[in-house]
Length: 139
Image 1 (cartoon, rainbow, N blue to C red):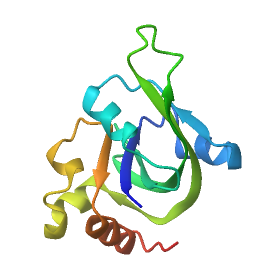
Image 2 (image 1 turned 45 degrees about the horizontal axis):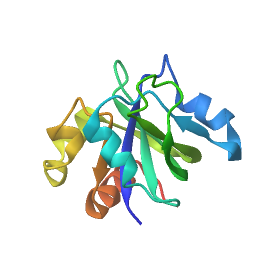
Image 3 (image 1 turned 90 degrees about the horizontal axis):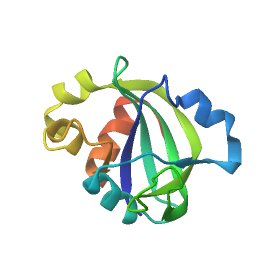
Image 4 (image 1 turned 60 degrees about the horizontal axis):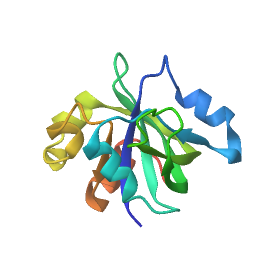
């Protein structure tokens, strides 16, 4: 299993929107960055991702599971980009902020810190465990 982080502006698609979709999940469309798209191409069914509220909140608020592999994104008229489908697994017991992540020496090399503008990034198993601990969350 691999771990990921997926960013969303809460005004466009929030954690509550994701929760409301239930077991059906929701397509993660609109990604137009090649590196983020390549990360989504590497995702497998059952992989887990942190759901991160970007812009004003800047915090990890939940965990999602990949439930459909990379497939064409109908919102991309060029046909170059695709999407995956995700479903909510669990809310973080305590959201983990970007400030907390940056302050923790164990997370210095996390792509969220190093590539702050990238919307879909990998998360190592070690970083996943640290953030789960910080968020007082277990699966």
